[in-house]
Amino acid sequence: MKNQLRPNAPLVFVFLGLRVPNYALSSIEIARQSSGVSIIVLADSSKPASVSSDVDWFVIADFYSPLDFRRFSEKSPFSADFRDGFWQKTAERFFVLRAFAAHSETYTFFHGELDCLFFELDRVESEVVQTGLTGIFLPRETSSRCIASLVYVNDYLTLINLCAFLEKHAAVGNEMEILGSLSHGGVSQFYALPTADFLFRGGEFAGEAGSWPVVPENPRFIVDGAVIGRWIFGVDPRNTGGRGTRNRIQNHRFGVPFGLPLASIETISGQKGFEAPKVSDTDGKMFKLATLHVHSKIHSKIDPTYLKRIFGRLERGKASWIVRPGIEFPLGVGRRVSKQAWAVIRSRKRMSLGFSQLISLEWWRGLPARLYKL
Image (spheres, rainbow, N blue to C red):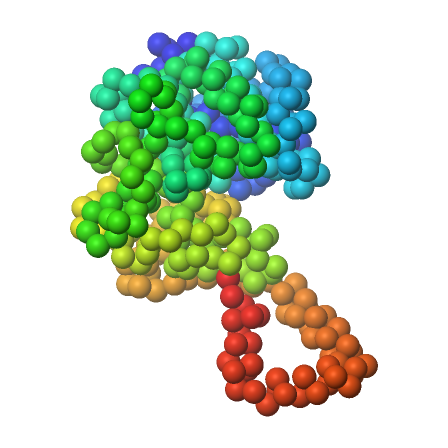
């Protein structure tokens, strides 16, 4: 399988783990319809019967050895026990991609994260190719953080160099922070794709936005690292303690912060099917969204009708419950209240403090936020 057999760079997903989750299978099917390119999946497990026959599926063990990742793993500050080694696997995927590129002679490709949506990547590739640049193109969302929701590779040597860079800087932190320490411009072959930050580089927020160079210089698309997707689809409900998740929240309590005001930009759904949604900059110029990060992992209910409803409410300034609170949340509140009440009863000092709080209007006003804030 070589690049010249494909009219456009394929979109390559990587899943390291025993069983591909249901949201990922739904994401693969959506990408098959929406991305505009062919789909390749690299996974530890064999291809499920439910996956379309036109999705190419490769078992990772057939071309990759985990020993290639050992030096990074030994230096990483993150435990391999957290969510089955989640933070280590976010970096290991690049070593898998390097091995696959060499094995298949696929040296030009997109890589996407499975909890994202992808739109019209053939157009994205066309704009990048017109620059004449080669290397690795990835979304920089802040001065210190790159989020590899979508990565475009058109030079194998740069992919080798990226893996060496990750290995050398493994102690820096998670893979977003390591990628965030990459330099752009000059002789660097690592290029920043335009993200939410780019939408604020004109008008009143220009002084607060970043100044790193983006490629293309005058893009017609935006790649969402995470923040636009969180604005539209909320955060992963696994992180909210049963509180569920809502959208249209600038900085979620359970997400990394983004300082520029997302309410000042406009999002519009595609006109038909899985056509690319659009987002405006602060001057009203529209860009197509190439990627949307669905951190809440609700892919199983995403279809064109759902997207139109969610985007339509956002256009009217209305928030939506993306995942409603679960029964575990009120049960957990009940347990905490019972535990605290017992502690108060056993202590005269705490009983006096508890009584003063109960008669305080400020305490009651702040109670909903302490319980429900997302």
